[in-house]
Image (spheres, one colour):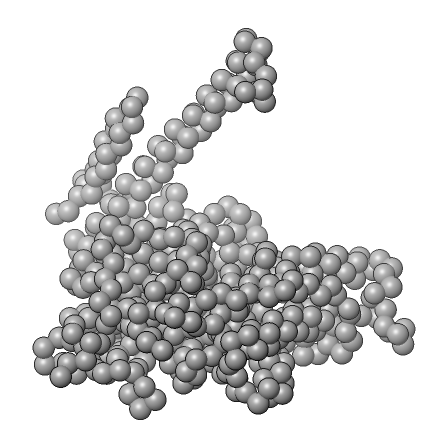
Length: 371
Length: 104
């Protein structure tokens, strides 16, 4: 009997192949995934055939502007698609579907990649599926880690959300009220004028490892939500005082030594991550779950993983995280989530492929989960 | 041979954009480079488009770049003219008619 998941299987084939295009921020990613027929499970896993990424990197002290980021994506997308096909050793006629990020994200970069997706879909005569970027992160995280029903902490440059699944929706329990955590870290990196290569957050993390003294920063958890713009302004001012050699009693430790840039990075991370741990713990208690899955670019941060682990261990739970191949924006997660949608019957008509900067996680009907 | 073209239509103006296929075009556009902002910040451009290959697709790519340049220049000028007109209009209304902008 054909499973409800396999009504679209091509004759004579025992698997599906999808290509996914991601470009909602400064990473351009293209990935190709294979789903064996039947329901995915711990012994029937998706296979990653290729996962190619190219990052738009700006000079120190600069963020990425939509226009230049879109230009990067436009000028690299064909090369990255070619590399992904080559790595996967597949030809376009092997593919079942083209998936692309439809939102949320920055308008111009999203649009550039959507144009590329429409083009290859018409060129290769393949259906299109528009994917919610956050759903891509969650589903890829679940597939890689085998976490079945975790509380998801989604932390990146554009998003900070605590998510739990209920009745075919990923519901947002708590989120940032202003800027995202990655944005907060990136902007502090700009104040410090440190390199954006490979990423500003990574460089803050390395500096923080050398920090020893904790400077107390505002702690701004608001129920299940959190706010970070005030903390950023506070620490920005501290850094400016530090560079200008201005007197500030917060910049002197109890033993009289001076606070360093490393100490500031350490303090910022400790403060922000403690807030995340608190709301994650509360969400776990609410939904009675003992699994936590961390996804998104900031999820690579080892200190965040460590702090979360201490809390989760206390609750006799388990923590799941992925490495930079899947944490940081990538094409494979879009291919994976898009293929799940496609197997449930979804196709996006070309007239409906317009991108949207605002596309909330809980707008997506998670048809492929029946629990 | 594929030659791209574009049409612009507004209530007050109609314009066709046609690429001259008898001259050489490149993928290096006048208006499709990095923004001045990042260049001033010391950016090194590693995202330039690849050169056009010597085939129909390559010539389409370079002709499209020229077409895009023509459209960009035209639209930018038109937007500038429109915003100048709007500024002048506010000035004229304020000076000639004594209309206070904030009192609707």
